Image (cartoon, rainbow, N blue to C red):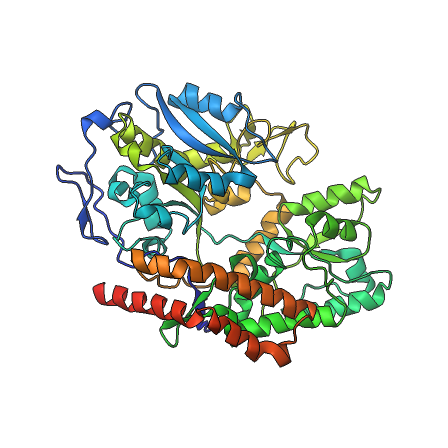
Length: 555
């Protein structure tokens, strides 16, 4: 299979990742930036372990308190007496001075705090690209200067072959300012959930091989079940129209769309970026989805709320809906509450498309930033050791995901972890009175970035059904390669920032209009392309490609 185009994961640098892992008086040299790493003085080593290395359990040599910008998730509101906090205190000598921010306001308030000089030591749940605007002001730490103090992180990057992807996170100065969550395998959890009974009424027992075949199945399901209003009515559409569905489909059309839409897409054959929203691949994707609406198979209400879409699925008005490995439990519970406990639903294997059967590029997840002032704190070295243990060691990740053996889980003779009977998480022990995240604080995105971890740990807290589905996707599909990232300087970042926003908004608006029939792809596509060009798409692509060529020359 040949994939000729891939999306730009970020606008941070491209260079060879290398950092000496042995500290010396002048600090190790980061060959990517050409700068020497920074040696931490004794005055900033309070509480740090002298013998900390990969695999070492972190325990501060004296109590330390780190400031933490905490994203408070509504599904598991923070509790001061959570087990996770108690054990970090009692077993690792770590406590936190928290700034708790509701999830709905987190990005905005995080930016305000950092911009006003009130960054905490640990800035949790941060996504790629969000660090860029803080670099020039010096508000966040160039953490790549300190990689030699993070042996678990550097070991995982090397063992899992993530060097190239890490290079893409470098800024114009060659440094990395955001520590990403790391995954051994690609992230795969979203697809389409179907009512298997209605599929069987149509004589369909196999998953569709392609999205074209999925459309054919929807047509058969609608014909065999005339009570349906639509074969599919979708959720996760109110913020980005059909955000999940388009995102799942896009890699197999050779483009990016929906939640992961990016204005820049790398054309491997040409060795340069093109504007995603006006490519033939993007048009083909939108044309196929538009056809579902035109044929009466997909509900045209593509800006409805999740509750509206879910209710249509539960009430029998639709037979398919976007889902992930966790929301299957939500649907099954709602069917049971509606007096239909035996309705069979499942995730279909992600269909292929014109570009093959692929998973998106990238094995990084949300991560964290460190406030630059932390480097002057007495406990700075201990802070780096704690972060390295918590987020990147096997032990720390297991603790963040599962909790404490004997309290939240046990292990059988072959080492398989088993949640306590009275504790549930997602579909595991779904009816249990306590929840691993809400009642204990584990499986919490603040300490476990988007379940970033080893494949074994990733699969360990899944039901057999979900683990089998996940392994099927990983085994049967090819992950797209990571695209090269240009090194945009500060002026270029400012120039492209406004362009990125207005172009993305325009593409999303036009996409929704095409899909719902307000605009005709056949009649209006050329006019749409002209509108996008008028908003500066050529200027954006020229700037990106100029920076890319400069990065290649400087490499």
